[in-house]
Image 1 (cartoon, rainbow, N blue to C red):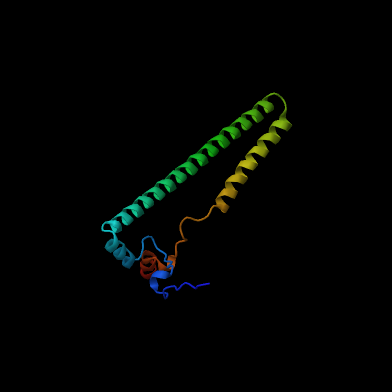
Image 2 (image 1 turned 30 degrees about the horizontal axis):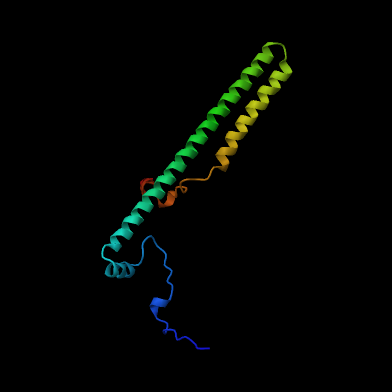
Length: 142
């Protein structure tokens, strides 16, 4: 059996892993040396990928907004229908059932509004009044 000789390891025999949107400029330079115009193609592909990703994210956001709006509209219509039904029941002499239906409907509606207001993640950090320059001026004037 003969053993095969392998070349000594150098930088080209190792895999490099880097993070970031684009390859290392040294690699782009090397690509350009090997195949002129390849660095520009790599950057164009990256730009196209970024534009594609942003378009997908925009479509997802629009879809979520549309779904939320439909949900709100349907919930509003359902609550109005239930309240009209409760009012009709009360007018037809079914005060207990109509009143109970109206109370349950209004309570659940208020509960969902309160729950939504308390469970919604904050989109902005709370205002730090001590770091606000206008409040510092107001404090100094007093």
